[in-house]
Length: 633
Image 1 (cartoon, rainbow, N blue to C red):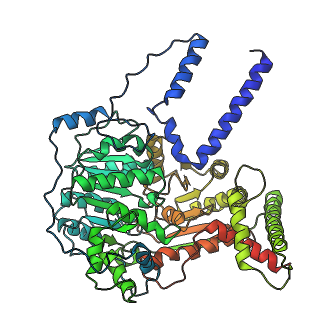
Image 2: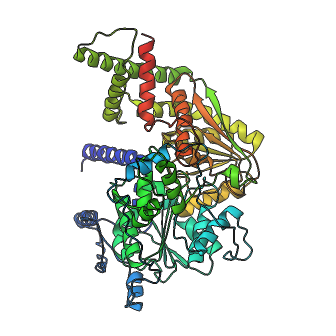
């Protein structure tokens, strides 16, 4: 190429790279494609082959084709693999038969509720729970018989182990984050002899689960599925796989003969139309078909993210419901109450029936009194200079566009635009349309780009506050949502001479663990800069008791998960989460809405009699912005 052609081509490549980086920043699971040993797609392999041929470079021989799947149950169009180790195990157990050892005796056929639609009433039962409603199933006294020597298990953890030992086989383990659900699940599986055990987890905690298994159940080896499973040891008792690669392994996993299945961060499957949820639910069905009473455990400290219907996918995983129908066990339990949805008493009784199916919900204040309290403190900051002016101008522009849309809608209806009143229904319609059309590609201001702009403007202020906090209170965990905010914070820490490290979505497991170890063990590492997405789950940072939230999340659950990296078993100091809020911007509106939204799980699970929060934080932010703009006209 000529120099001009080469420069033009280089600019083109850089543009493609920038677009890829933006996409990956929003969906961090894509970074798995860059991991060591990540498989190359067939189209990519062919393109690389052709490029090397044209460039006159040596062409590497193609790797041998993977063996065909054995009795797969894939979703149509998905690439399937079968690790060689899984084939070896199948050959070593050629006559593996379904387990019917726990078949229950015949029960009378339900008559009272046979023709009733029950899913809606069950959801209503949780939505309308009262202050005195129980949120946890009846649990037996704790037993410590199944705990490895030298380990201490808290009483509330040992209760779940005892329940599994007594024969209970389905649990929605919804304890607040930090109460040791991982250990409970592993020891429950050991007590129930639910091996081999399948554990499905987010990518960032795969190795953590393997380490915890070695710690709590050392007699039962754990293996982790990476990529196409070349390093899998299928003769292990525990198989750990992440949601992101489940699509290519669902075939052989379904016929493997698992006697138990655990899903961590179970709210990941709340969208039943997603491929992730379909694979998890398909595996659950196959395991229940092969083993009459397998151990099924759904672990999540935040079972409700946006709506009461978030329960449905988890209930289906546990076998309590089947699509739009109530499962046989739950139906018989409801039948025993002797009431139908016409009866007012049906709803509290139905809620308690579902709870007794296996809902385990304990709060730190109730069961872990040795964990100090936590509090959230807001740190208001003023955005000054060009950055502050830019934010305020962008917010005014967004509000003006919403007002114009509102007036246009009124005019189209032929309704005069009277100053005295605001049509709340129309306000919501206008904001819903704005939200549907919103995107963060830089073309026009919207609620998403506004929050990113505010995050950048707050970055140095939040980092400066963190610097002061680290000098007076010790180690600090700094959370941000966007990469550019993390970058700006780290530049300021470098400038101020503050020892720091980070956890990001593009790090390998080895780098990630090394950075965590540095923060925990190195006295000169005072701050760890964490991505809300990549570091919100699966890590323990109790060495610190202070968390700085430089940016707000769109969900109360994500904020809670971040705080609970510090506020968990092993913490011996009161925990404070410092939310940096940009005064007189929509940042303050969102902080208030997040606090209200936290009541959703409290109402449904903990029985608190509070007003249910809005289900869409972005929509409520726009509604608040437009309503205020109309009132000051």
